[in-house]
Structure formats: structure tokens, C-alpha cells
Image 1: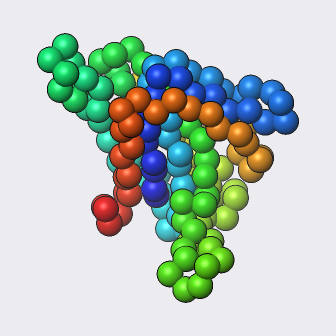
Image 2 (image 1 turned 90 degrees about the horizontal axis):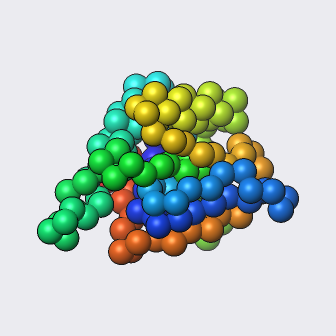
Amino acid sequence: MRAVVQRVSRAKVTVNGEITGEIGRGLLVLLGVGIGDTRSDIEYLADKIIGLRIFEDTGGKMNLSVVDIGGAVLAVSQFTLYGDVRRGKRPSFDAAAPPQQARELYDYFVERIRAAGLRCETGRFQEMMQVELVNEGPVTILLDSAKTF
């Protein structure tokens, strides 16, 4: 499982002109599910994201988590995180999980974030979405449950 985590001052997702999710200060999480991913991958990533200390404390040091600042999470499913362009220029998505498996694990990720007491807004699974954000810093963190990076 892969995630791109961005520290934002605000972010929103729109589908067909309708806002499906919107947050102020917090984290935008683009989440990609791979073929072999399981609930344990979700648990690892959700716990890591909830505890990521990428917000500044009063001394200006990245030392606070989204929980510490009372922030929110906007979770957006993004299978293209498994796009492989090592051969040619057109991405192959063979490593991405099939939609049913991906949806179940994405929903479980959202449940885990909410169970931690965080507000978690979402995009709309398998829809063309427009994602708007203001990345603060900018701060962007890449996570992989297989710990390949």
C-alpha cells in the first residue's frame, strides 16, 4: 500500500461540480492499494499517518501530529500510485489492486482514521475527481507499507 501525505492548510475534492470532501488544516492522503495488500497494511499506514509529526510546534520544529493540532484528514483513493513506467512511457497498473479489494481496504483506512477520533473526509471511489489543496511548507511524505521507501 502506498500513500502520498501532504500537510495542508486546506484541501477539497469535487466530483461533477459537487464537493465530496473538504478540510481545513490537516493532511491530504492520496492512497493506493496494491494487489497483495491486506488489513495489516492499512493498520500500519493509518497508524503511521495518524502519528506523523510534520506540523510545527511553537519553536518552529516539526514535532506535532495531526491529532496534536486538532486537524483533519482528506483521504482520496488513487490507484495511479501503482503506475509503473519503468518500461516505456505509458504506465502499467498491473500492481494495483482490483476495484473491489481496493474499495474494501480504502474504506477500512477511513474507518481507522475515524476510530482514532479524527475527522476524515473522502473523495468518491472510482470517480473522476478534482483535488484542490494548499500544501503548507511544502511538506510531502511518501509512505509504503512494504517499506520500499
